[in-house]
Length: 310
Image (cartoon, rainbow, N blue to C red; front, side, top):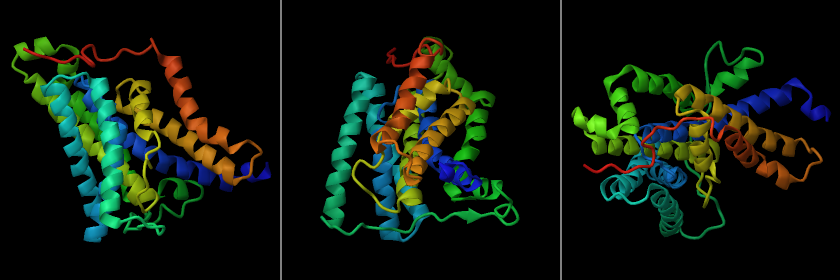
């Protein structure tokens, strides 16, 4: 018990919580843009997995983690384009299409990873993002290690929160997105291209979710493992709802889920006498509890999940 009642434990916990919230935050911000336009992107899980795979491949063959992250974003856009074609253009059910994207990603990443690297017992490691220590700040007591000794992608993720808020609420493009998600018929009447806006929002969600997946493979594990997303894409969908489709709320939701994930890891390493299976399920249990508590209390975009045809 003494191991978890000291400053070092809480510093490590909060530092890990920030890192673990990042992939959820990236994907949730992407999901927010998609859902604000009226498209439910359940395929975030599969897009993140594809991004994690593509990030490793890009970093492996170029030697640059930044190029790996770019490849991850492009792969996310490609898979999101397929999702947009199915849901926005052909207008197949969005939930079913998202599940199909997830299943497709599992098969494709597993197949191509073995096709490129073969079956090996030695992990394929790549150049990954290293923590960036900010001069004068990273040495500050307590907060230095938590806030100012993270990787570049962590800072980018949190910077995207105010940027996303500004785009959504202070630009004409953001107004178009919100109008399309609430009243697509009215938007079409005043000349807003509804399906084009929705397609672009889905593509943006793919880019951000792909980057979220790349953070796991290039910023956490430095390798790719089958199904390494482990449900974080679904947690991101929950974070969008929990955050009420608002960047600020999504940030809070992502941090809460990040703390839950970090807590189960730290408690295991501290040797707490709780079966590890219960600790592993804690972040997902929190997701269920959170969603149960807010069902009926949030107001989703009125046209969410509804295809639009002239």
